[in-house]
Image (tube, rainbow, N blue to C red; front, side):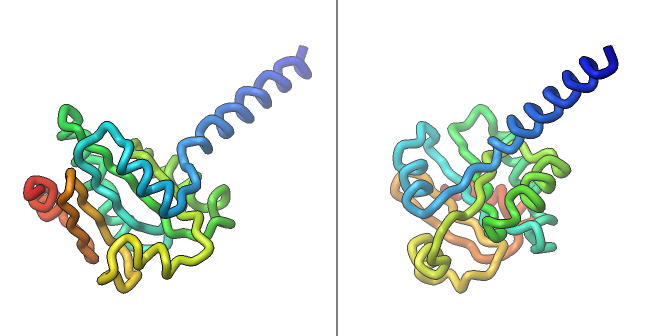
Length: 158
């Protein structure tokens, strides 16, 4: 009986971790552009961050709050981690779980980070946090940390 119970506990644990890890998807620039182009959401707020970036971590709750407060709007908040791909299971997934992030979370999967940076916005130096706002044909790129009020102001400008 104990072995059977242990087996079920193991299976439940395994599948809950596997199911959770599906919440962080690998993403390259073409996939990001396709997601935006084909998305049913009319406004995209794409935040570029990393688990080792203190200002990034500080502002992540603001993106969660924005999505929660404007859930009736056609808004997609995408959180793109710039951590190394090798850190997906050891750092990114546990971080997302610990912070209870509800927005879509991706991990950059690009062989040429500089090309990715240039295609997001030619003025981007590569520093993070950075956020891209897109609504229809309007794009705005901001390379700095946001307070919630600043984030809300930028969102409402679109």
